[in-house]
Image (cartoon, rainbow, N blue to C red):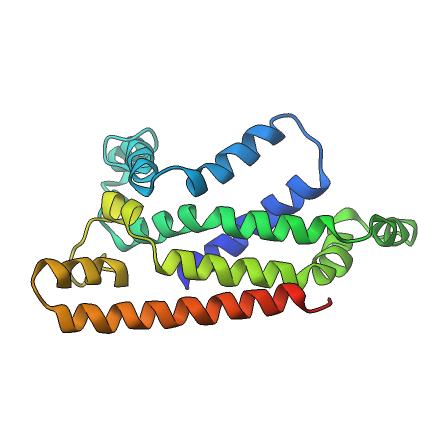
Length: 205
């Protein structure tokens, strides 16, 4: 849930900017947001370690200043899941925002609404089904994240263990029954998510 909330906080504004603004570096932002969808999760995890690890670009100054490191904490698991799920939300929400009639936004502008109020009162409500579908998909992707989480957060029992990591551990230790239960739960949840997402996309705003 933390990753989904963080995705909403970061992803919806990015989707809006990509859909409605033309700015320098727009293609680069689009590329960086989409890359986790294409790259192997372990590669994304490596980049996150380079960025946030104890000796990382951002992690080293943070560690020197506070003695705190993001790596191998539950924060790391949330960040890894967020990064891997972000492309699904941004791409789905962006497509939904781009379908909103620009004339409705222009009408709001002529009535004295600012761009922020227009976005909050007109654009996003009209695109809500697509945004909700993106959130549902990103939730499922975050829940199923394995590679980047293992790289950045590790698999520390009681601290950074996620459901996919629990399945991996259960298979490694021969606890097949536990692994089967967890696999069945994730499979059922994935089916529910896909059905919900399809219905949200098909439903008129």
